[in-house]
Length: 93
Image (cartoon, helix red, strand yellow):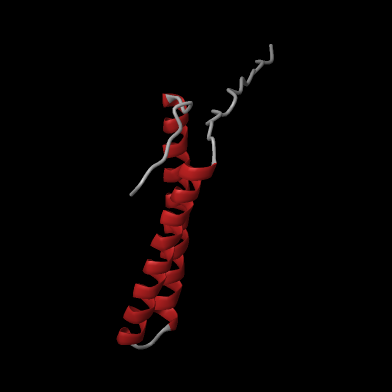
């Protein structure tokens, strides 16, 4: 896979981009995994399911690659961790 990073990109940006790419990949994978689970129940022919599965996996993996390419070529990415929440519990006397 080709990657294009500008010299201005810092190490933090590269880590942020990789974190986002991993998150997107996990979400897309979860989505097509669910689709395939439903399809397996709905399709009564093993051969038809296998053909559909192959096409769904190809399209899904192509989508992940395209998103990664778009992120690498066109976006600056900065991960902002969630703010820490402080919960105060008061005990009744």
